[in-house]
Amino acid sequence: MPDYSRYESIKIEKADRVATVTLNRPDRLNAVNPALHHELMTIWNDLAEDREVNAIVLTGAGRAFCAGGDVKGMASGSLASASGSQAERITAAEGRRIVQNMLDVEQPIIGAINGDAVGLGATLALLCDIIVISEKARLADTHVKVGVVAGDGGAVIWPLLIGPARAKEFLMRGNFVNGAEAFRMGMVNYAVAPEEVMTKARELAQELADGPTYAIRWSKLAVNKWLKQQANLILDASLAYEMVTFTTEDHREAARSFVEKRKPNFIRK
Image 1 (cartoon, rainbow, N blue to C red):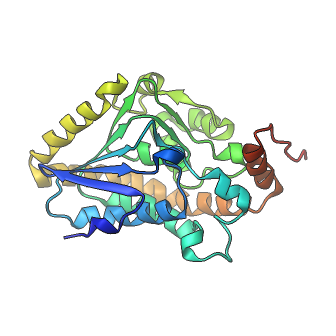
Image 2 (cartoon, rainbow, N blue to C red):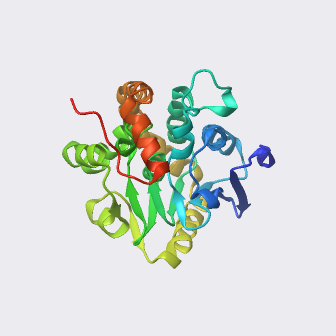
């Protein structure tokens, strides 16, 4: 049985064969620092091995689902630094494994998107098997806003859901789409009132947890072969481009301007 007590930034609760996984940094809008990034890599393997879990609900503590990367950490230059310890930096290898491990989990994952899902947060939300979002929550891949490539899965999942043309516009502009519009675009399965998000997600998770286990799991895995093919095609390149853009002056200026609460002044070619 996995030991979930070692998780510091993720809370895991189990009941009736459903595990509720909560990103638990509410004071930082569940922004992803190196510790949470590492836990996002390992949690899926633990859940996959848990025989008491037949379905998973993924949500965020507080008013956000996940604000994406911790931009203040980016401004310090430590998150992607090769000189930092494993606990102090975010690596492309971990980023790849987060996506791969999430797609490999046999149990269905129900996304309960209670608030804004940004950057990696949007990728986590959109990689869920069934997505329930608050009508008022917003989705965006804002990597470009901090001068880096949408490397950690955005370039994989957005085109699959809404097509290359619309996906490229969202990824190049970093624009937001609210839950109601995301439903109309086919990005999510359900857009409901904020107070109904967890109720609907748990209802779906319980139905799946009580259903024919292997028929459900293997139907998911069959479809995920398509997603994994796209991830294998795109992910290494997008992560490599992202790591390179972490070294650019545009990224440093974007991170500084965020911390200083001003408009960035990007290099003009």
